[in-house]
Length: 215
Image 1 (cartoon, rainbow, N blue to C red):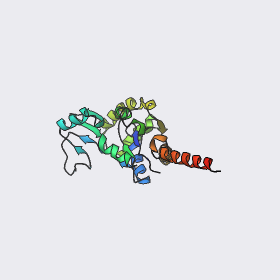
Image 2 (cartoon, one colour):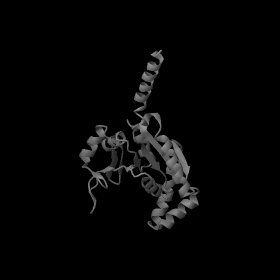
Image 3 (spheres, rainbow, N blue to C red):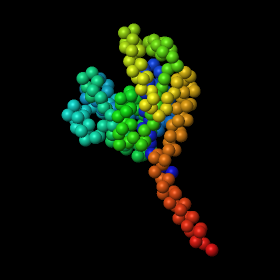
Image 4 (cartoon, one colour):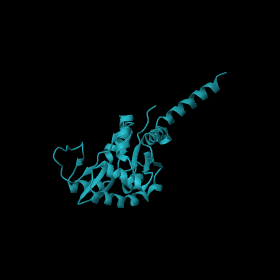
């Protein structure tokens, strides 16, 4: 039977493994799509509309928000960013899961959206704060000042851990990946994800009534 897709929200403080696990999930199931955000910032060299972002003017973006066509949005460093509802709704109706990399505020907006019945939210915790700092340093992508800012922001993000459906401590990457796969597999079987079940039950009822009428 066909199923509806899930809106999979994966959140964590920077350095807790969210990006790595997102890539692993998409390698595990290539049908999982990554949500493409809309933004009002101009495209950078090499960026393509609809691939990196959906590039929109500020007036277009505001119109989408006022029409209820954005699942979540925020104003960041002078530009708007958000998730268009249309492509996500089309994907889940086609049975494809959509993966979101958003913070707790974006997650809250999506959970309160018209698509809330299909949301699966997961938060990743680091095993310890020293380990979180070590991971940020070992990535060698940021300078000390940026790492310090990320560490300062991490507690604000961690403080919203209990607003999620599932919380995993990412102390072992392989084990966390297996747990994510188990959660997603189970959530795909929730009643809201199986629109054909009602028709199947009605068919069983008809068959039962037919059997009962036979001598």
